[in-house]
Image (cartoon, rainbow, N blue to C red; front, top):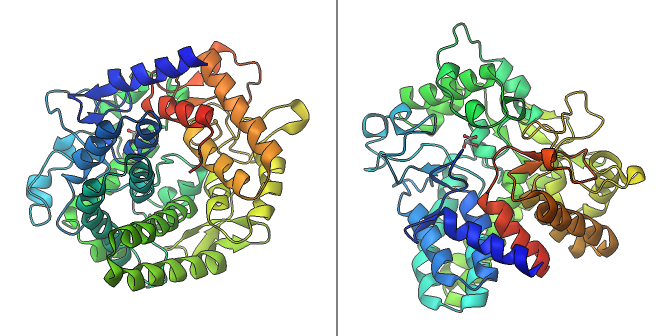
Length: 433
Ligand code: DGY
C-alpha cells in the first residue's frame, strides 16, 4: 500500500503545473477543471501538502467572474490546443466582456464542493490567513448560485449544461437534450476526446452537437441567466449539485464561526434551511431522490448515482442504503463496484462514462455517507474494493462496474487521472468527506 500511496503522490506532482494547479490528466484534460480541483485538494490535505492545496483553489478562483460564477475550466496554457472545445469556442472577450476580463475560461460551472474542501484543508493546516482570503470568494460563489440559478426562489439551484453536473452523459439529460433539434453535424468532427481514448467509453456525436448548441445559446444571450432560462430546453435541478451545495453551506457556516463573521450566520442558516426543505419535498418520491426537469416541470425518474449521493446530507439516508444494495451493487455476485446508473435500467452500460461505470470520487462520497449512518460493514467492503481495484489496475478515470476480477481492460477513460490518485489517498487513510 505504501508504494501505491507514493505513486499517487508522484502522479499528483506529475499532473501539477508550475506548482500552481493540477490538471486532471495530460492526455484528455490538459487544463484546470473546477470540480476536479477540490477532490484533488482533499488528497493534498491528507498528504499535508497545504501549499499545493491552497494554490489549487486560488488558481481557480482567480478566474471568478464579477457576478460570482466560477468557470468549469480554466485554460491556463493557451499553447495547449489539444482539448475541444477550447477558449475560441467561448469567445468570452466578446460575449462576456461585461462579466469577466479573462477569456481563457468557460462560462459554465461545476458542482460546488469547494467550500467543503477549503474547510477540510484549514482543519489540518490551521492557516487562518488562507481562510480569511478564500472565504469572501466562496461566499460570492454561493451568492451567484442562489441569486442567479434559483429562479423560483425555492432554495434549489439549477444547472444549464450537462457539463455543469459533472456527469456529462447521464441518461437523466437525454429527454431534455432530445428536445434540441440538430439538423447538421457541425462540431462533433472537431472532437479530440474520442480519438484519445476508446470512443465507446465517451458521449456520442449527437450529444456533443447538443453540448455545443447550448454554448452557442449562452453566447447569444451574452450569459444573461434569465434569457438563458427562457430560451433553453436544458434546465435541471440536480440532486448531486444541490447535495454538494448543502454540504458546502454547512462548511461555510463552520468557517464564519471560526472567523467570527457573525453577520453572515443568518444568511447561511437561511440558505441551509430553505435548501433542505425543498430538497426533501421536491426530489424525494417513494424511496429515492430524483433530479427535476424545470422545463418539463417533472421529476426525472431514473435511478442514478446522483440520487444516491443524497446520502451525505438528506433526511432519509437509510432508504438509500436499500436502493444502493438493490440497484447499484451486485452483492450476490460479490460485486461492490457502485455503478453510476441503476443496473436494471435499459440504458445501463458498464463502460460508458456516466451511464454505468464506477467512479472513485462518488464512491468516496457515498462511503462517507454510509459511515455516517453506521453502515460500517458495507462501507468497508466498498472502500476496500476501490482500493484493491486502483492498486491492481491503475489510476484510471473510471472503471467497468461489472468487473470483479480487476482485469486491466476494465480501466476506462483516461489513465493517470488526478482525482483517482487523490481518492486513493483519502480511501486508504479512511478519512471522510
Ligand atoms: C469533458 O470534456 O469531457 C468534460 O467533462 C467537460 O467539462
